[in-house]
Image 1 (cartoon, helix red, strand yellow):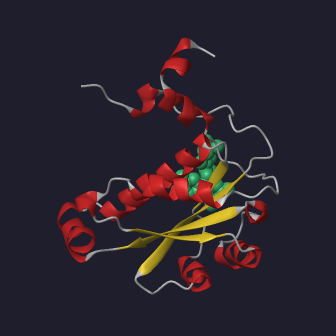
Image 2 (cartoon, protein in one colour):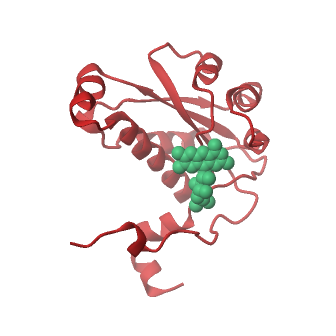
Image 3 (tube, helix red, strand yellow):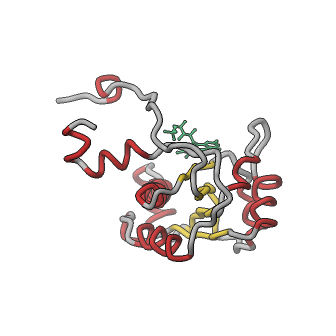
Length: 184
Ligand SMILES: Cc1cc2nc3c(=O)[nH]c(=O)nc-3n(C[C@H](O)[C@H](O)[C@H](O)COP(=O)(O)O)c2cc1C
């Protein structure tokens, strides 16, 4: 391990995270779920409106429904049923910050907030030695029905959490910094 990786704990954690699509049958504990949810709770959000809502699904029948009925065509996501937990991440918009302000700025603040909170979840899970995968190829209305959320909560993603069956750290296929960044 290089000196850089040793020194920068966050960078090391971010490098370790990768999408995990193969899980052991070992269960994630309630204590681990509590820590993950606490990391989500303290995430920042526009105007501190905290538009996220979560459904933590451990029940195998419900996990199966989420994947079989709640995901879209073309990608087989059956592997996700094998994750110990599926966290449904939903958005509940507030009037001023998430409906009025974006009309003026053209920026979707709650979507940014959901991205931040989801990444808190996956990075905290990574620190606990758990594997995760974001699933965005979903049918929000179906997912809402399955977890019995009210109409004003829109599911935006599922996040699988479980013990990885293979090592987490993988080669990162990413653009070089120069392709994405302008230094002025
Ligand atoms: C918002 C979002 C939605 C995603 N949706 C899916 C998905 O529906 N199915 C899936 O298998 N992976 C999904 N992924 C995982 C990406 O494919 C993955 O993060 C990307 O290829 C980079 O690989 P890595 O996570 O292993 O570093 C999603 C990731 C994000 C951030």
